[in-house]
Length: 171
Length: 142
Image (cartoon, rainbow over all chains, first blue to last red; front, side, top):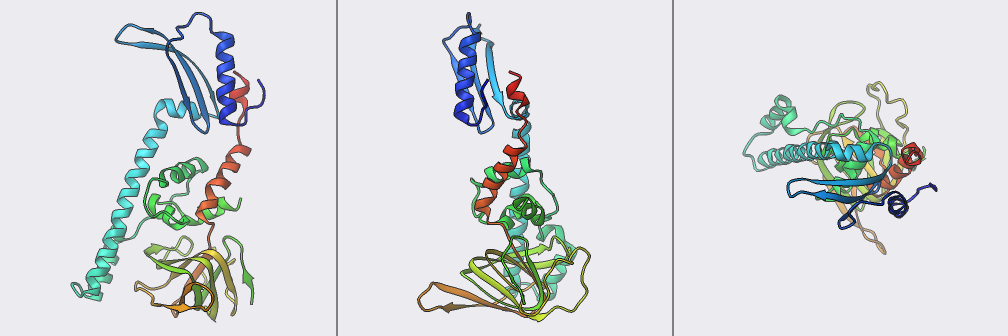
């Protein structure tokens, strides 16, 4: 096989391989899945009404296909999104508390005490040092989330250490 | 008195003056290196932050690379500014003739400011790291 550099290469190589190998499979249904790191071409070979069988050829970078198949990427995405929601709630509650102080619903002393006594409710934990893969996933998810404009916005959303992201950016 | 323009360049000052197109309040955070609660602001587009009074307090472990001399100045399009306070800082909108308005800030609490990587460049940079480390064995074995 020639060097594979692009998604288009993946798709073309998969189609060529399938045409060379396949002789008897039912060509009625062909499914193609393509992402940045994985290309799958599948042909249905039987369908008895309850189950379907497919032959598939997959071209993938590293373990990306198996991570996708096992649901690892899906689970990781759900966990990260839950964390993002909770961190946004923490930030909202901090700003709400600040507003209470401004309009004198609570005193400045009470404001400081609330934060001292309940730091995890008002200050986001930003201690996780993410892998490159996790950071890439975070960047993809953040495209669909409002108000993520900076490295600090990203780290606040997903509890990443902002210094570690900065270090990755200059490696 | 040093002009600093690289990602991760950091100043640590008792008093800091600066300007930014936007000086955005981001709330209370834990500073990643000194592990202290500080109020975070973010500066964008043609920002600078300059030491106008040197910090002479305790220097925490892991902060030897912080720049602490009078006149040390960060210039960048993305600067994070951590301020040792739980209260908002007032900034003044200044109309620079011939240019857009800017927000001018004068911080009179301890301040640690760092040049950040712009988010728009991060994904592109990470993609190039991933490709260099790519294991092509899985493709070649097919």
